[in-house]
Length: 158
Image (cartoon, rainbow, N blue to C red):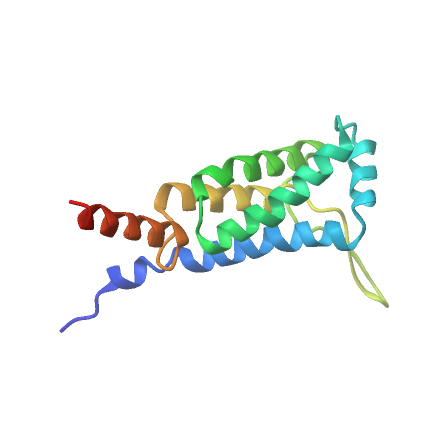
């Protein structure tokens, strides 16, 4: 009886799904906790059309989409608006700061001082979503449970 690596491989996307889902939820929650009007003002300052609508759409997709990713539900569907949100963030906010998400500007008595983040983290999120779409959500994904129930139902109805 040998060790079967393929059993572990199917679980490899679960940590990815959990951290990406949590990350979207955390960003959506931060926008709500800081006051959605601050996010609306940011979008308005960036020249985003219909900033009120876009702010709430972004918050909603981050919260609901993050939960969907966390649960492994509707990944191919929810990845599209989440990727659009990330690409808009790259173009409107992070692109001028380059690739790196960590920019040490200096060290003071208060500790390290960092500059604005580049688009690295956005690309990592996009790559993670693509991995989940192309490779599947892994075990314990809601989509897999629903598919399993549908198969059982089809067999029972024959």
